[in-house]
Each structure stands twice: as C-alpha cells, then as structure tokens.
Image (cartoon, rainbow, N blue to C red; front, side, top):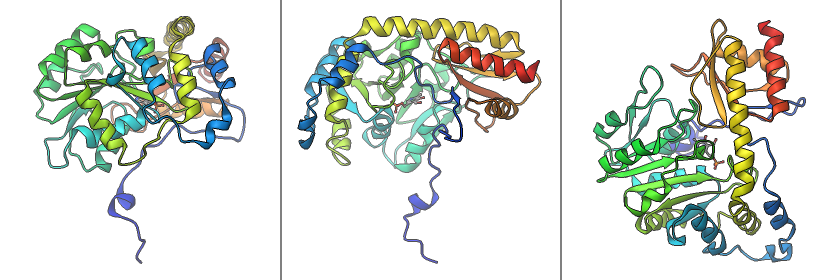
Length: 354
Ligand SMILES: Cc1ncc(COP(=O)(O)O)c(C=O)c1O
C-alpha cells in the first residue's frame, strides 16, 4: 500500500540518541553531559532575560553571542556561525561543503555516528578510512584518500582519543585544496583547539558546542569558526531551513557562559581528574581503557562482552552507552560523572565483577 513517504524518509537509518528511560532514577553516564552546573554568570543571565521580548523573533545576526564567542576564541565575529547544537551545524556542513555528485566526504570507520547519517540524508557519497588496530587515526592515510573534504572528530568519539595540535596543523596544511572539518565537541577536556588556525587556513572549519564543556546540553547551542567565505556557505544553507535556530534566551545565556572561562576551567579540570581516577579504577577491575582526552572513557572488559557490562550496569541503575557495531561491540562508552556518580558506577561494577 502507498505510504506517502519519500524514499529518504522511508529508507534512511536515523541517528539513535542515548536512551532517557523514566522507569527509575539512573546514574546517567550515557550521553557525555557535564556533571557540573552551568556557570553562575550564565544562570544570572537566564534570570535577567527579558521574557516579555519572547514575543519577538530573536536577533537575526546573533551579534552579542557571536562577539562573545569571537572574544573567547581569539577570532572576529564574522568568523563565527551559531546553530541549534553542533549537530545542526555538522548537518549544514554536508550541503555547504559537499556535492551529491562529488568525490564525497572522508572520515573514519569509528567516529561520531551522525556523520554517515547526514551524508545519507543529503545524498553525499562517503569514503571510509578504518582506524588503526590501536584505534588511532592515520592522518597521512586520510590525506591520501580522494574526497571533496574530510571530517575528523578531535578528540574522537566514541574512542576519546586525541590528536595533538601540531599534527592537526600539518594535516590541515596538507589538505589545503579541500575543506577540513574538525569536530571539537570534546576539546574543553583536551585543550589543543585548532580554532585559531582559521586565520591562516582558509579550508578549515572548527565546530564546537556548549553542550559538553559549558554544561549547557539542555539549551542546544553550538558554533563553527571558519574563514568568512565558509561561514557564508553555512549561512546560506541555514537560511534554507530556519533563519532563527538560536532563541533569545539561548543567545543571552551562552554569551554569558563563554565569557566565564575561569569557572569552566576549574570545573573541567575536575572532570579531567575524575577521568584519570575512573580510568585507573576500571583498569584495576579488568578493563582495558583507551587513552581518553574527552569527558568519557571507552572501556573493554577482559571476560565480559560490552553488551553484558551494559546490561548488568543498567539492572543496577547505571546507564552507559553500548554500540553493537563491528570492532567496538566489546566496549562500553562511559561518561565521566561527578565523584559520587563515578563511585556509584564503581560500586555497581564491583557488585557483579566481584
Ligand atoms: C563528536 C560529537 N560531535 C558533536 C556532538 C553534538 O553535540 P551538540 O549537538 O549537543 O552540540 C556530539 C554529541 O554527543 C558528539 O559526540
């Protein structure tokens, strides 16, 4: 029978977000949110919002927010593009920088699983480079792949592994005749951002988010930093969908948040030190943990499958993420929580691992 759907709507496999079950209270370590609250300055900006102005559409140019981001990143406001979460910006990158009949978008086999979904949605071919045995990315191999452009998550997800800035710079230069998109969603936990390179590299787009390092996943805001010409490509694509993807309240709160680097430096240092404690504690319990530069760890137990660990933890009220995919099915991705949450995870693990 006719179902009235397009071929895309009928056949595409959409991205699956981390579960949010409501049957009981869980220690939620499955979506890489920050365990700490947003900055007091961001909360104050929220309280001070003029809610009566919500009858009006938000500022079209988002000037205040873009200037605050530019100041924090050491670039100009004209180099900043804001969107409804970095997922939306990554989505716009596909129609903005790739052609359906072009050489395609190149990225790793194990990386953010939204990339192949965006490519499929916009009918853009993909070129997939397998990560090395140790899950590192060979940038020379990626450079050698024929493609219209490349996408690299740094730190990568779900492995958590990071590439130092020096190597990224060499890579961006080696690919100067095509677009390089760096997804730096987890950069606040690594500190090797390539954002400033946009001044010298016209092919570079750095995509960041308020969701992880700024404890604002609930407000949905992300941004891209790039040369003006690339920013205008993103704007043209955005304006084919929605001229106002970032609401008034969001613009105020995020502008205040990004201006409070002192607070976030302190809180993210806590996440990093908990990450190191969690890694050591997992290794003691028989896990192999990949070297993480993000706010999560990717861990594989010596005798249990990833699915078993995920299920045993879920039964004990702890949610982690398991991907039933080739090469990584033995792993679980575990968000670094607060000290109390991490202790809860370790107690639950000891309960079934002994
Ligand atoms: C690698 C990576 N990029 C981008 C995002 C999207 O973040 P948001 O849309 O919340 O900005 C995520 C979210 O988990 C991610 O893991």
